[in-house]
Amino acid sequence: MSEQDDDKSASRRAEEFLQVFKRGADFTQDLLKENERLRFSLLQLEGQLKSGSNADNEETIRMRKRIEELEQQKEEILGRARRVEEENADFANRYVEIENENNMLANLYIASYQLHSTLDFREVLQVITEIIINLIGAEEFAIMLLDEKTNKLQAVMTEGLEISEVPAIAIGDGLVGQMAKTGENYFIDQMDNYERDFHHPLVVIPLKIKERVIGVIVIYKLLVQKPKFAEVDYELFTLLAGHAATAIFSSKLYSESERKLSTIQGFIDLLTK
Amino acid sequence: MSNYNVLIVEDSPTMRQLIVFALKRIRGLTIVEAGDGVDGLKKLSATKFDMILTDINMPIMDGLKLVSLVRSDPNYAAVPIVIITTEGASEDKERAIALGANAYITKPIQTTQILDVTRRLLNLPA
Ligand SMILES: [Mg+2]
Image (cartoon, rainbow over all chains, first blue to last red; front, side, top):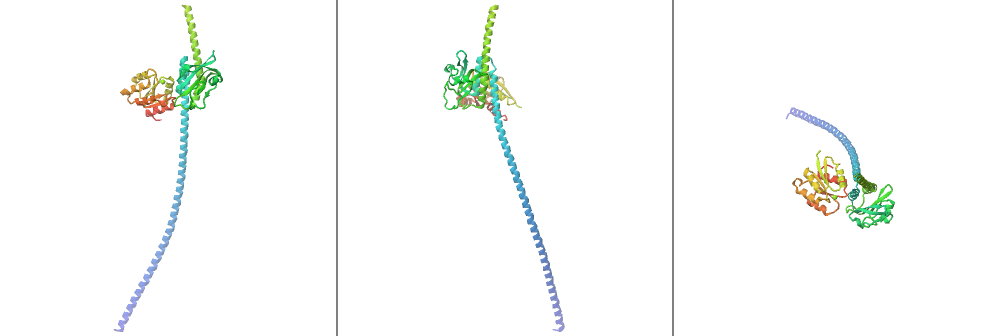
């Protein structure tokens, strides 16, 4: 081998080395760049992550607020629903009250209408009987009128028993006589297991024209389905006390005047014949 | 507004008036009154009725006889019949139902009872 050859190979190797070295330097440069890029990405990612979790937090807070709002709205709506329900219950109660009042007024209207629908004494007694049976719901009772001559109460109409069964009662005598004397209504305290007693009935209603008692309604037995009196019954008794009395009284007067009139007519006929 | 013909058969004028008074609250009802079963049958043959309310105890022809005669008439085989009874748990009530009555109301009657049963049987809104 010549010296020339040695030189050539040495410079080639140097060249090669330089190239290798340059490649190494380039590579290192690339690595550094890549490193820089990665660090930048990392920072970016971290930033994103940070801002990302912030956004999540904000969303959560927003949602929580919304839930609270909705909860509040729900409570309000439930409250309103409860108030509406309460109002409905009030209306229902009021409706029942009005229906009861309506029923009561219907009964009173019909009772007074019927009582004054006739001037015939027997028909008036029939109407009173019907009111006591149908509107009050009694099964056994008597209408007793005061006989002015004997000062005794005498049964003139009965339901569920015979007239002859009812004893005459003197004014002031016993419970019935006392009520006729004072003009006060009587209602028994305990209706259970009651057995008919002419001197101790369930109810005594004096028939009054102003303060003057002309008779009494005496009740001994109510219908099976009627365990006690309702408000409407007390109103009906009050109405009967006054209106039945005037109806009886005026029908009696009317029949008397009719009788007198026919007697007079008879005389006139006799005289003019 | 549909019109219904309702017949009330009842001998007591007080009861009749009370029933009429109650039924007047329902619009579109034409109410006809009869004082006993025979009178009721006469009226049933003259007009077509959509409902009958009848008392049990009546002179001339009682309510039970009326119910059975009404049910034997093909024109009235399905007409709603309401009976008005006095006793709470009487045989009359059971007999009337067996004969074909649809419902009963018990004395002393309340106007609401009459209204409720009428609306129910005529399918009217409350
Ligand atoms: Mg009757």
